[in-house]
View (cartoon, rainbow, N blue to C red):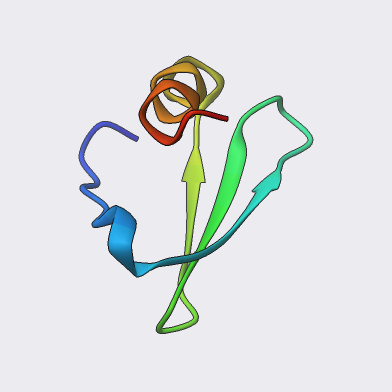
Length: 48
């Protein structure tokens, strides 16, 4: 959600989620859901 700030240097993996968003796995093992709305911005920032 918009209340979560993620350091992109700490992202270990990015997977497509069922809801057309993404699931980020961080280096510490925690996961963060990225909404469909925010997925577009993430793709632009990471050039996906």
